[in-house]
Image 1 (cartoon, one colour):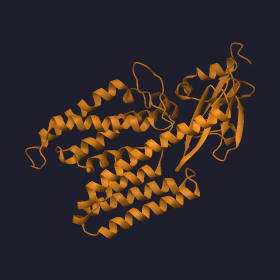
Image 2 (spheres, one colour; image 1 turned 90 degrees about the horizontal axis):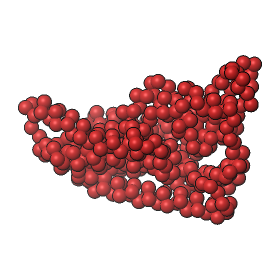
Image 3 (tube, rainbow, N blue to C red; image 1 turned 135 degrees about the vertical axis):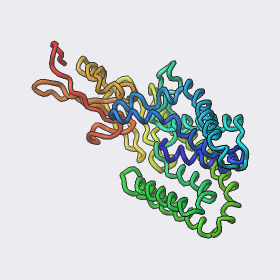
Image 4 (cartoon, rainbow, N blue to C red; image 1 turned 30 degrees about the vertical axis):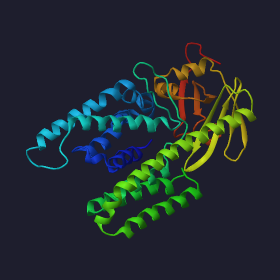
Length: 359
């Protein structure tokens, strides 16, 4: 999931009452919920490097066991440095901080597993990708549910108000200003955001808001869990129904639709083709290809090793030029060949004509 979702998960968990268990509890949960994403630095080396390294070592079982101890150690050092400067309650409890660090850190791969991008949970021992195929990478309802659990507790100061305003603008820009969401989703987003702001405004004083913060946070987290379970179940129902409608697929995968619960774009895999069933029921059949020498050379290219490792339902087209072959790849989870070029799920490789390589 996106950084906003991970951050709100940590903050909402803290507001359920966990922040009272130890000093730095909120910081531990929020940092822990984002910690596996340190591999984002791979993005500085390009999109393919990001695909190759992201959701790998830092999200694998070995790192997930180490991160909580490293985080607890860092917080302990911070506490030692700050302890002579200030006194606060609750007291610092290292054992409790470690437990909260495990909770925050392990919430991260769970959320990542829920979408169709995948996560390599067994790294560095096994590079297999695992997919929950339940939520889209950006889920506006997850944002709203978690924000409800945090907004009441942390919206009193001018800094907090500015921060919430900035977050509302940034998330609204994603939902309203891009092609991610449909018109109905955009309308529902505006309604949900307005409802949250009206609730905070109606409560008025920070004292009233704080009194309701913990029960609201607990309700929002519980509702989120129910929402995820229902979404997971509906995705499996959709897969089962289409497997019966179109018998004997090798694999069935339901792609969640951004912001539209229970709507899925489903891919059925056969030996010779992919069958894609759109959310409106339209059926498209795409030939399933087997790579020839040129395509194999493209997949072995250093510039596409990340995509080759990450792709799940690939299709490709090869264009011949005077000196090379241009191979374009699409992953059907995110794009169809006629959707164009660029973005998530697309890669292009140029294979020189040398050494007798041909088709």
